[in-house]
Length: 309
Image (cartoon, rainbow, N blue to C red; front, side):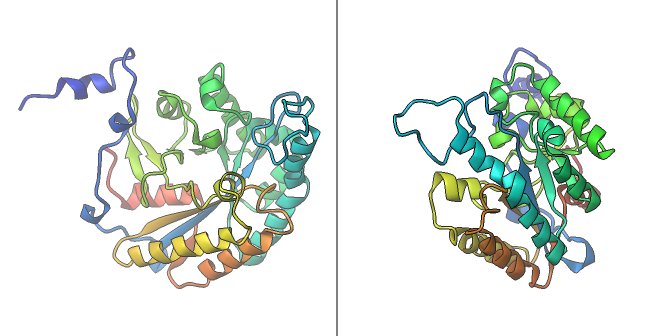
């Protein structure tokens, strides 16, 4: 049998950019062996809370107001304060809600935010929420000067603050460079959530050992719904339930994973929180649903799913 020269060069040549199609082979979900979750569950749901620190000396990552005379004001007090409300107030609404519903959240957190918001870190540690890396600062990973240093620094900051190194990574805005998966593996991460292309975990090829991708969401994400598509607050509930019902039906013969992504400054505000609550109550009330962390999903798949190629 003749080996494809393209395949052999993919992982070994540092001069060639690795394309997305090189990272992962195509796989039809209906042709895979059935997956079974623990405790008779059929649908794993993980809730990701994104905690970010926005630098008031730089342009804001997102905005809710534009200045009346245009331009890019510095400092941008209205938009910085809009986000800061989430960490001062909105986050604590999430804490109360998840406590009430006994949901283990996953904190995707900027490395710099660990020092900026100690009460948030303490609350998450006390509840044994999982911490995953989310960049050291909230910026496009393609614009970070030294990606490896950023990823390593984030890991070290989480370990120092919590006593446990992070296993997972979620790029700010899901951004990656050509080398991000390689660097994540080399810096000790076990899984990533940037590749939103499946309803089950999948393996990504790297120049080292394979990296697991846990299903995340772009569309059941409050940034997409509220800030980009400008929907009414109720859209979060409607879309979450529509997605849940289909995934639940799909999971009759093989397990599926559903993600819900929230930010304290978006779904944690007074006029939106009730729609998150309603969605979680409906989802959690269905037989066969198991709320899990990303690390728990990764451990389950590593132990019961197909082996890494």
